[in-house]
Image (cartoon, rainbow, N blue to C red):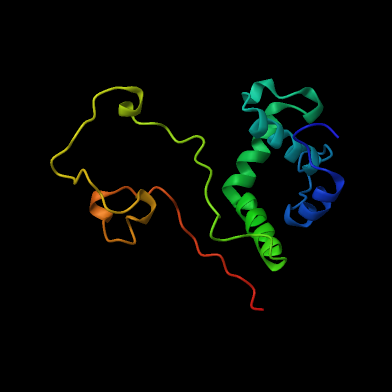
Length: 155
């Protein structure tokens, strides 16, 4: 198995979650496992789409699958399903569950630039950015996440 690719066991787990469409062009449809492996390769390496290796097929086709699956909620459905399965086995510690912030842009002040201070907003917030909405600070904060409830199966 090559890096950034699904094992057969992982693919069997995800296979029912991805709809296999029939091609409308007369050509055989692309293999969804191959498309998903190409997406994982791009996301794992951080390379531009045009640098996708040929073994995954044309980069435009892989990108098209990525865009369609992302906009139709396929990836969100996969995450929810995996969370439910892992939670049922007791493998998720919800106290430690978090969002990866590796791509969060640092402020200019973090790079040594002067800090802008606006008199209309408080400079010493008592709540963290993600808790601002719950704390009633919506006018003074930015709520950048789209929150959607996850329905857990009853035990």
